[in-house]
Length: 332
Ligand code: ADP
Ligand code: MG
Image (cartoon, rainbow, N blue to C red):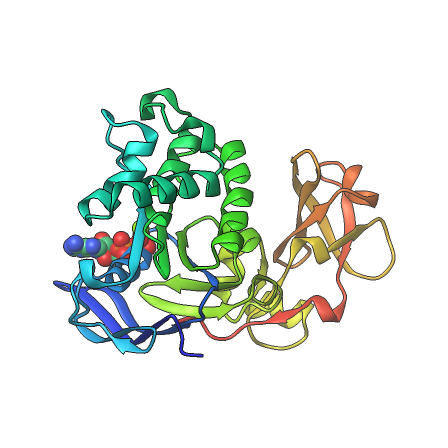
């Protein structure tokens, strides 16, 4: 099967800024692919290049195996949902969703049927008669989604669509979006800077750093086997051991990461002597920061055993199994 989207050697410069720097990417049909990275890492530019709103400085864009590099946005079978989804305030919800079909000259009965279907798909079947001002933030976001889905695009591009919502609503919408993706069966390319969002929703995550893909893979792989120090630090919390601290704790030179949930804190037994320098209580678990004698800080996280009861300034042992030590590639 041909990839739904292929980028081949895509770069984009704005003056002296290399926003996108030699990106190669194949997105499988029906996949939920997330572009994850910090602000300014090139995610939106990649999305805009796929949509055709931006032409790459070099490289090619293929949709379903067809080179569309020179095809204008409106001729591409792609729809985009932005964070600041602008709904028409004077139109009803149904009117907003139907609008695009009207512009395309789709007959009225088919328009009504497809609009009802799209609203059903985002669980807004009963709210078609309301105005956007009469909806919650999450409901408005779902109208924006329905407005894109009603076109039945092969590919849906979503640029931080939940960015404007508060945490609880965002988490609910993450579950909804995932269900909508599964039902619609179309290819999603989803942009976010939120690693939790990326881990919980994606089939694969492409981690962006300075216009490049630093690692691409399923969430468990990106989290469990980060390829670089950047990925280890950006996707989840990591203890980085470099230089002298690496030599003393791991026993050889290099760059290593250990997840806080793999660090044990005990009163005695094997491990490195350390002192507790700070404690963050987070509800379900705690983070205990320990300064190892001779240098190097490690954070342990969890809810059980000693972590729940240690106190500031206490002398402890910190330890981890050799299988928890992740060896990282060099920093770009
Ligand atoms: P992200 O979406 O990951 O935050 P962007 O793709 O928006 O990143 O931006 C990548 C880089 O390109 C940033 O340094 C940004 O300032 C720059 N950039 C993006 N769009 C433009 C533009 N139209 N003109 C000039 N610079 C731009
Ligand atoms: Mg962006």
